[in-house]
Length: 376
Image 1 (cartoon, one colour):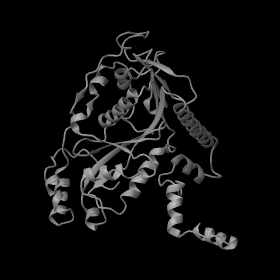
Image 2: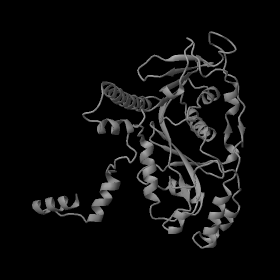
Image 3: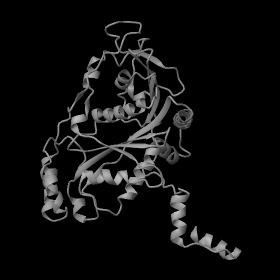
Image 4: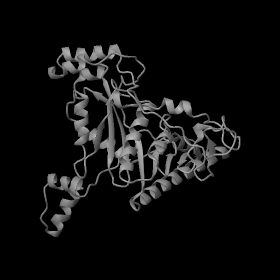
């Protein structure tokens, strides 16, 4: 592009800026960039492309329905963005977990042969103001389970309700453990809380841009501790407001198991039909019907009402959602012993700065249930 620009300036007899100045204006003044195709492309679309000329009628119907759902969810998201920007009491967001950030991070070849400390980042992108909220914690403080995800969303909703928001729409991929939103509605007295699951294979959101910005920021820097990861994320966006980073610890992760145990029914709707949660596309909770959730299995279908107290009371609604106690500090601390051994070996070999040795020695040893030992 700079060569074309230079050629044009030469032809018109205009003074041209340096390549460095041109790049800075392109990146920062115009906030432009080049799109890189996703590595993990949609498996349904790839299968259809590979079956060209051999597709059955059923295959074509599945593909057409898939494309219809893709367009529909994008239109829903665009409408939610517009409504959020034009209303004082509505907002919309998308949330996603970033690929595990490893600590230490750098170019040392030894890092690629040792198990490292995982740092998690759940990002919530707010469409009303364009802010990105990054909730971060190391694996020694918590896992990537439903408790942690629900707590992060809980904290995001806290911020929004303090600003007068009454209706929230959330978009996410189809990851299990992310649909724990009824408790938040009951605690904050929202008018409504809607959770939309994007079409499989087409779950791109603004969070992908946030994560890419963070990866570019740390590409050529050394990181030895989770605190340095927090600082890197805070300073990753320079053109507009920085990302809002919240450090999570096991002492403030909320136990949502008590809420789940008090819900008597999550499988049978009011008409006696069985709910298949793998097919759920939208979940809605309303203030005027606190003892129920409204579920859609098709984006353009009618919602099915599901009475959360059905086993106790066969029909009807209008009951109050049970009060829930906020129990914190439920996450067991610790990390696998072999991983800690590898981290201390990096300290002993000088690959980790000596000033961080005390931090790694202090890491508690726990179970080996997590999967953050590898780059994947």
